[in-house]
Image (cartoon, rainbow, N blue to C red; front, side, top):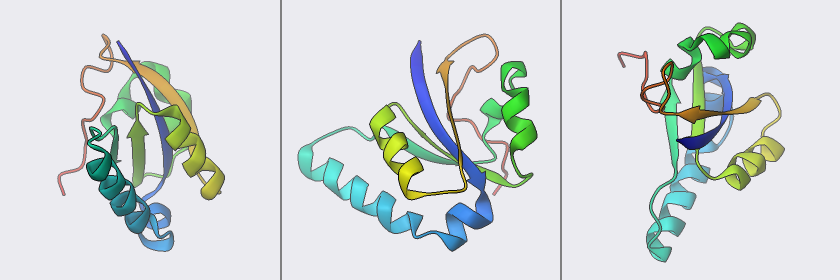
Amino acid sequence: MTVYHYILASQKFLLEEEPLEEVLVERTRDYEEKGKDIDFWLIKQPAFLEAPEMAAVKAKCPPTNVAILSTNEQFITWLKLRLEYVLVGQFEAPSDTISDPLASLSTV
């Protein structure tokens, strides 16, 4: 199993109020220059929140949420320090309750 680290926040906060796009574009460019595989993903309405063990986290989230998910804990820690209004956590997947960590409930 792989450990996935995440930040969660409202879509409005992460996608409209914060300059998150430029952070992700810069990080993607850096990875490409270094020949590194991408180890982070932006997921609207992440399905992992539907797992029973995530019920307490889901209860704290706004209804329209977005997650930045990564296998790189340092990247998530750095984002948390940069962004104030986010939840941070981790989970292991694939598991019986989280078969696809990158799945989304969003149809858009």
